Each structure stands twice: as structure tokens, then as C-alpha cells.
Length: 563
Image (cartoon, rainbow, N blue to C red; front, side, top):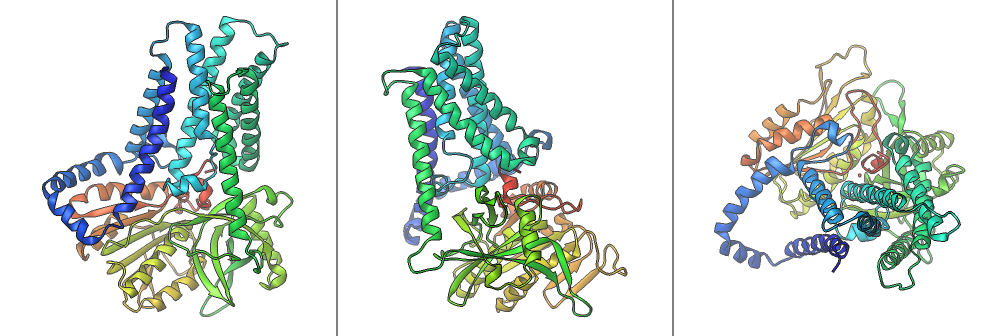
């Protein structure tokens, strides 16, 4: 077989290996406990070796992140970098091995470029196939970007070698198709630059779709193969089939999630947030809103889930916009299930949400809007098996951690989890931000009959009282403490581990600086049975007073969810 066919087999084999591994892990969690115990006893010796190797792997490969200059605003560990380098080395080897001349390089680079387009046809938008396989949003985005970069570079190599061999004839369809394909990939490259992608995300998203469709059509014209089952035509057919499958699944999922016979369509109510004071006037919070979605077809919400929201009536262009946000909490009211999204004000879609909330102060039927919900996507972190759970959040990251508090408390009351202590640490840029989840915190504390939950709020700026100074401490009730300074994460973790019960896990939905610090601390505590979990979404720094982004930030827009 040709080396490009081996490359295609290898690429699909990696996907298959991941799917099989994920399936085996999922099945193993369902195995009868006695069978698991017998299996562990048989492999007791190997487990000791495995535990040592696992700790070293976590300490030196999986937990440490690459230098900030290398990863930018992304969350990239040494393991991610190692996988990426391995992939790139494989691409280079497959491109040059046994290539004898320029015509050979031209053919090889063109085929490898098209092979990479096959998985790219799934799109950067999280979809049902990727979600079922357990691929997280951040990893899925990185895979898409690196496959795209390789496809573009290989395509440009193909163009350069083809032009060096023969001058194009612009009166022939294959050459016109080749030129169109080259222009498409160059425009895709330019529009994908980080600054352009972040600043003009909606424009980028639509142009990206147009350019990719144009590219596939141009490649069909450029190839002009009469045999549909030979490369590159068979690869292009695979691209089209995969696009159709993904589109059909997405369309079907949207219909299923939003339409149910005999039930009203999903409706969204956008509500402003107010800081309620014991004395004096309440203060409106101008940088976040609550979006309450009444579901026509309810699902069982789980921590870690996010959904894409499309609200056609929000603005003239919102019908073509879909953004992912974490489900912050959920409730049942007047015969309907509701999910709530905590969304911080940014530009575009989120700004229009805030304007809508201010324009309709009455949360009645007239303030409701139609909403299309796509999802839910995302998998819950495995926190239930730990006796002590430490949840860290900065800024809007609290939206990702609140569902875990809810889920762990429910499990604690029913005895379904091993958790005996939950500590929530939240750093915020303004004291007003406490209003984002104040009501929900009261509900959770009221439900916590076992008294396993403690909350510490860290306010780094914009104090409400002129008499408040940095370092002051205030007590709100018995289990909420407000500290007017940045989190000292090292002291917090060491004090909790010293007083802990059983195994400990540290869960992060924090900014880059805080995440890096905590990762370093946990790396040094692996021998003490302390583990680390991190949500996809990484908010912006609260210490600089910046607004955190929605999960789209973890994706290419750098948005979670809204990640």
C-alpha cells in the first residue's frame, strides 16, 4: 500500500483506539464490585508498579503545563505537547519517506492534505459524535486546529511543487480548481489568526464555513478522477459523507431537544442580577444576567454540562448565532423544567442579552423569547469518589463549579457519594459579583443538612464599603466567609489537606495564573493522595478586573462555556 494510505489508516486507527479505550473505561465503571475486587487482588503487584508510574506520569507529564509563551491563552500540558509533536513528526515522515522527486512530493502532499480534511469535516463546533466519544471541548478544538494547520501547510506545499513543475493553464478546469482551492486555504489561514478570530468571531465562523465548502468543491474539480473509489476522490467522498452525517445528527438533535408534541416550544427569560443589601437600596449588577430556559423536552442536568443557545429574536443577526454556556443550576416550576445559564456581559450576543434584560424589567410572558437549545454536551468530572473536594473558581468560573456543589450535596444526602467535605473558594473582581449566585448559595446551604459545605469568597477590588480595607474578613452566616484579598491557594490547599478526611481532589475553573499555581502545588502533593481535575472553561483573570469570557473562550473564539 501507498504511504498515504498507511497515514489514513493510522489517523483513523488513533480515533478507533481512543473510542475503544473510552468504551472500556466506561464499561469498567459498571462492573460488579466483587468482580472488580477479584481483578484488583490478582493484579495487586502490578498495581503497585502502576500506581508509582501513574504518579510520575501525572507529576512530570500530565499536570505540568507548557510555557505561557508557547500555549498562549490555551490550556496545553506537556502531554498535549508530546502528542502534538508525535503527530507532526508522523506527518513529516509520511510526507518525505520514499519520495524520489518533486512530482512525488506534489502527489504525496496533496493526498495528505485531503486526508486531514476528512476529520476536519466534523467541524470545530462540538457535535454528538465527539461528545459520545467523551472528547472534551478544549481537546476537540486543539485537534481541529492542528489538523487544519497540517492540511493548509501540505496544501501549500502541493501548490508550490505543482507550479514549479508546470505553468498553470487558466483555461483548464483542473487548474482553475487548484487555484480556487489555494485561495480558499490562504483565506482560511488569514481569517483564523487569533486576533481576527477573537475580535470578529461571528464573521470568522461564517467565512470559515464558506471557505471550507468552496475548498471541497474546488478539490473535486481539481482532481477530476473517473474512478470514485480511488484517491483522492474516495477521500473527498468521505469528507462529504461525514459532513452530511454530522449535519443530519445535529439537525435531528436540535429538533428532538426543542420540539415535543403537545408541549410549548422552549422559551427563554433574561433577568438582570441585583445585589440585595440588608439595609439601604439594592444595587443592580451591570455585567451579568441570568437566562432561564423553560424546556419543552427536559433532560436530567448533570454537572459539567453546557448547551449552545440560539435566540433568534435577540437581534437582527442572532438567528445565525449559537453560543455555548455552562448550565449553572436547574429547577422545576409550574409544571415545567427550567435550566439557568449565568452569562457575563461581553460584546455581541452577550451584550444584546444584557440590553434585552434591561428593556424588559417584568419577567412575564411578554418578556419571553423563543430559544433553540443544542445539547447538552460535556461530561461530569469524577469527584464523587473523593472524601474531600476542593472547588476553586475565579470570576465567571463559578458558573462551572455551582453544579458540582449541587450534585455532591444531593449525593451526600442520599449516601451515593463518598464526599464528606466540600470547600468552595471563589475569587471575584468586585464585591457585587457575589450577587451572581447569592440566591443559589442560600438554597444549597439550606439543603446541606449534613453540613459538609463551606464557602470562602475572596474579593480583590471594588469594595462596597469605604471602610473596608484589603485583608479584612467578614462572616456571612455560619459557613460563608468573605475575605477582601486575593486567594492564597497554597495556604488554602495545605490547610485543607492537613485537616482532610480520606482522598482529596482539587477541581479548577480558574484563570491562567491561578491554574498554573495550583497545578504546581498539586504536583508536589501526589504522594499524599491529592488529585487534580480541571473544567474545560478557563475564565480571564479576576485580579486584573477583567471580565471573564463565556465558554467560547476555550474554543477557537477564546468562548466555554461560554469550554
